[in-house]
Amino acid sequence: MVTLSPRVRSLGVGYGLGVAGAVLAIVLAFPAVLALDALGVASVSVRLAALFVFGQYLPFMAFPLLYLRWRGFDWAGVREYLGVRVPSLKEVGVVGAGFLAVFALTLGMTLLITEVLGLPTAENSTAQLAQQLPRIIPLLVVASIVVIGPCEETLFRGAVHNRLREAFDAPAAVVLSSALFAAIHVTALTGSLGARLTTIVILFVPSLVFGTVYEYTDNLVVPALIHGLWDAFLFTAIYVTVVYGPGMSQAVLPL
Image 1 (cartoon, helix red, strand yellow):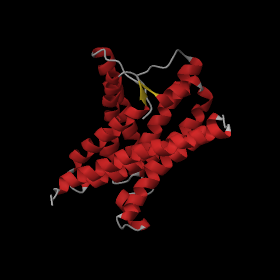
Image 2: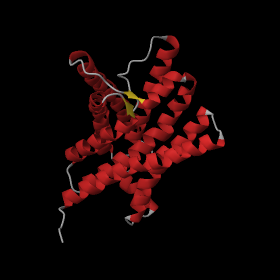
Image 3: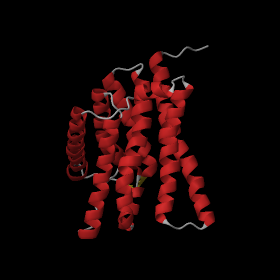
């Protein structure tokens, strides 16, 4: 019998959790959409709500929580393992600093790739929907903070990063979990393979910030807030640009 080293096992389990969550999101969301089609439900708000439940809460939050329960953690242990608590005043400051870091670094990387290197970027399917139906953007702004940020951070920082952290040091865990987080978004992007790859590189940057602040604070709420606020900011930018200005740049993508 082959005995895997702790690092190989940690990497396999951590990445397995991330990939399984992404696959589960597709497996659950697709039938939900088909069911709504069969029932004749055309409301965009209802369809989005179903996607939030079956494409976010169940695969990205419920799934990793059940995994931790399967590992033997009680609910108090799960909360401690993830580091879920009300942010302190200092941590609120970290949220603000983290948001500004995401803004500056993402803008810099985007300009480098699109303006200096002249490489194309892909569009996010949700961003496209928001541009076509700006009336749903307020819902997406709220969902960014209460659904997308908390759910995606529970899986990729809470489960994947922490599982990697059991065998790797902090910098390695941040880089490895961030790489997976960015790569998983390929399913939500449209465009050529090259455009998708350059966009994944851009998405890798804010993910590094999420992982770094998680390591610094050991509080999952902090990266979840930064993540949610960043997506909310991008959806708001889409709304302002579509309603009051020219077409939205493809370089700006919700995470």
